[in-house]
Image (cartoon, rainbow, N blue to C red):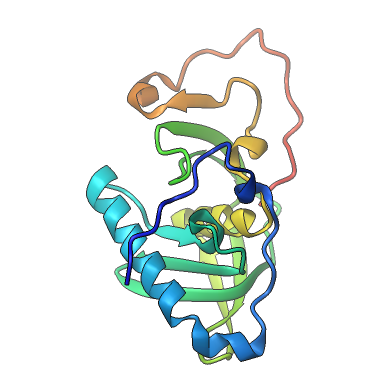
Length: 181
């Protein structure tokens, strides 16, 4: 359908929680899903990266996430269950701030519970990259950006400086991890 502009860091709409999709809206999600697909593919062509996008990143404040890794997946009103106690630290990136990397802590394993476009409830146990990715996307639905989930004040790097991200942080006070994911 159309490539939409991706809202960028600083746009207040990214901080607004999304509303659930009502049953009667499921049949009307096709245009949004096509726009999310087109926008993700355009981002991928430009940046060489991009696996998923949340509806609020294109200004639609409904709980919809589009993932395209091998094949497309649409998650309606997704939520996380069975979050592992084990956490992993990752350098997170985002289409809403493509030049910035943010070190965050995410659950190593989660179960994604969502509705598909036919309204059926689905469960998908996730680990590794997909677990981290979908936690990031669901944060978007709650109006939470990765920058708010940073491990500490030194957990930011420009993509162009990513090779310098293993610097020594001794001498910095330990920080309590924020609650995200």
